[in-house]
Length: 417
Length: 156
Image (cartoon, rainbow over all chains, first blue to last red; front, side, top):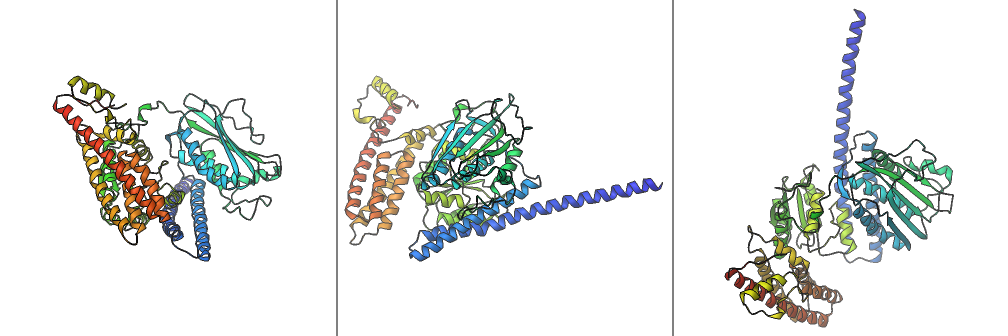
């Protein structure tokens, strides 16, 4: 009798504990989501407005101050992103966003992003993709880019002169193993393959004892810390977790100080079933259904003060099956935009309320980031300042970010929604 | 090119064709124009004409504003630049690449606050624009004649 009562009591207690834990996790996630938004909004304002301030007439002294504000703002934004990412990764609530994407294009984009920074330090960057590397793969494109960018970014950061070489190929059984992790044994199949990327730099190198510490949180090795290293020390820790989620492995090899470094990672990617070649480069007359990408009835808003551009963009989007509303000014945009609009195509060089301000107001209007439309910048300005400003505001910047707003460009953007 | 088959049909129908009529060949219009043509279909049969007419209206207004602005004693370069930016945008949207190219130079002169350079560019833009406009108008007229004669316009 007593034993049974005891068991029942324990069950009740366990159940209660489970429910409490679930409530706590939900509360924590809500808190993080709110914090995410709460922290990002003022962050965006600081970054956007200091960027704009930079473009006004300033004394050299003022300019220096504004640059420092901007740099600090960017650093802070990166830190916030990193911390939030890591906390989601730690508690297992993080989910990869699996989709078919263009692997070759990802590497080209990487090159575009890293070349300007490398050229400032007069470093040459070489990319070589194996000829048998598939053009399309299935996986989390954004996180894969994050991993590569982080690794390559580190290579650039810690290399004073020379070159960075990036090679990508399919993992084969005779490829070199990590001597410290002999149990990792990738086995390809019909539906997936393992992508292997080597990033070799001619930088300051690392002592073998320091290598294992690299992937732990907040660790910055003494020999690596330089005055301008910056960063939170979370980058590689996050990379490692992403790589693990992708059932892969990441490690670093170095022969010692002054002998450069090679970072190697392997991730598992799916092979897409059938790639629809006809989607490049013409607009399909009838909106075609590519797996999940069906734009029929997708509500979008186009803001452009140029009548011709408005008409052309609208027609392109209508042909992709979207339900398009057009406005010609920032004010109109703010009046009309609603929760139902999934994407806003914005000409950010519209006079009156500047494009950037409209973006901020839209962010303010939709406090719940799930309701907020994706904002895509369309602009005739291809200079880097504009592009960087857009990226900071969280605007999606189509790779060929300029008018004419080509059909395949819009298609690519909509696919990523 | 896109209009080769059109020419063949016109010849069969017996219309005299101006050899200058390959607007694509002469480099006035680029790929963007082809994309516009592909957007035209039964649900929107006059799309190209409509957009191009809009472009003509817009451009003529802008060219007038530019002439006025550059004739002032003190030129307001910000205003000039804003107009050229508009023109550059719309010309690239319809594929008028020659107009667009001149606009790029025009904007550099604006940045340098070079009045002479700007006036030269304005003249160039006006030339390119009238050249292109007359070609497009001829094209539309011929297309209309073809349609009236019972033919159809093959699209690539």
